[in-house]
Amino acid sequence: MSGKIDKVVLAYSGGLDTSVILKWLIETYQCQVIAFAADLGQGEELEEVRQKAEQTGAAKVYIDDLKEEFVRDYVFPAFRAGAIYESQYLLGTSLARPLIAKRQVEIARAEGAQAVAHGATGKGNDQVRFELTYQALAPELTIIAPWREWDLNSREALIAYAQRHGIPVPVTKERPYSSDRNLLHISFEGGILEDPWAEPPEDMFVLTTDPRRAPDTPEEIVLSFEKGDPVAIDGQRLSPAALLARLNELGGRHGIGRVDMVENRYVGMKSRGVYETPGGTILRQAHLALESLCLDRQVLRLRDQLLTTYSELIYYGYWFSPEMELLQSFMDQAQEPVTGEVRLRLYKGNVTVLGRRSPYSLYRPDFATFEADQVYNQADATGFIRLNGLRLRIRHALLEGLKNLK
Image 1 (cartoon, rainbow, N blue to C red):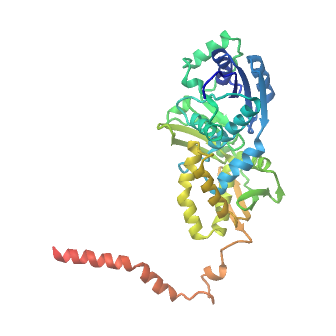
Image 2: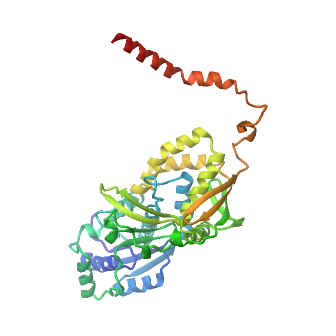
Image 3: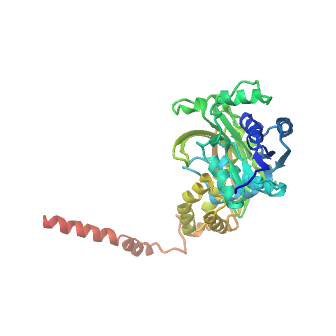
C-alpha cells in the first residue's frame, strides 16, 4: 500500500535486534509502534519485555499467551501428518512463525495500523514465513523488514545505535550462537556452530540431559491418542500445551530429542542447526507405532508420498496456502482411525516402543500367525507370486533373445 504510515505492529522479543528496530521504526517512519510478543512457552519473564518495550518508546504493548493455540492448531496438525523436514527436523520454529504473524495481522487490524514489521534477517527462512503469512491474510498491509533496509549490518553497529538512543544493552556474556525456543523445541544456530565438524558444547543444551548422564533406570509411559492427537499420559488427560510440556519434561530428563543437522534453507544456502525436541520426539515415535496398527497400507503409502511436500510447505512458510489446506484435509481424514494407546520406554536418549493397541486395529493374529489357521490358504500365494513375477520373466526372455542375436 502507499501513503503515510502512522502505526506499525512489530513482532517484538525484547532482544537487542527488535529493541533497536522499535526505535529505528519510530525514528525512520515518524510513526507509532505497537510491540507484540507471543508467549509460546519460551520460558522467559515477558513482563520484563513489556517494560523494555515501553521504555524504548512503544505506543502500546501486547503480550499474548498463545501456548494452547500453538500446540492445538499448529503442532498437533503437523504431527498428525507426520511432518519432518529432511528426515530430522520436527519444524519447531517453522510452525511458530505463521501463528505469530497471524496474531500480528489481527492486532494491526484492531489498532488501525497500516504496516507490520519483523526482525528476521535477509538470509534466513523466517523472513519468508512472516511475509507469506502477511500476504495471505492481509495483503493490504505494508511490510517493513529493517534488516533489508538499514545500514546497521553488525552487532557492534546495533550496540552503538542502542547506546546513542538510551536502549539498555544486556551486560551478560554474549552467547556464541543464536537460539529460539517454544513449547515444541529450542534451536541453536550460528557462531560456534558454523563449523560443521565442531561438536556442540554440552553447556549449550537447555531442555535435555546429556544421555550419558541420564538416569540409569528406564521409565515407562503410556500415551493415549484420539484421531491422531495425543490426549493423555498414563491415563491422565491433559490440554495440548500441558501434555507437550509434560512430554518435554520426561524426554528431557532421559536425554531424548537432540538433533544436529545441516539443512537446506529456502533461500538456497545450507545451514547447520542443532535442536532439542524431547516431547516431540516421543510423540512422533508413539504416533508412528499406532499408525502401523491402524492405517490401511495404501493410505499409509499415499501419506508418505505426500509427506515431503507437506513438510516443505511448513518449512518454506506456506502454512496459509490452498495447497496446505488441501493436504491437511487429507492428513486429518487419514487419521480418523488412529485412536488407541502406545506403551513406551524412555532410556538414555532412546524411545523404545513396547506395545500398541487400538479398537480400530487392522492387525489380525488369525491371519498373520505362523501357526495352523483356518482363514488363509497358503496355496493361493502361488498364483499371486507368478502374476507379480510375470514382468520379470518377460524381461529375462527379452535379454536372452538379445544375447542370442549377438
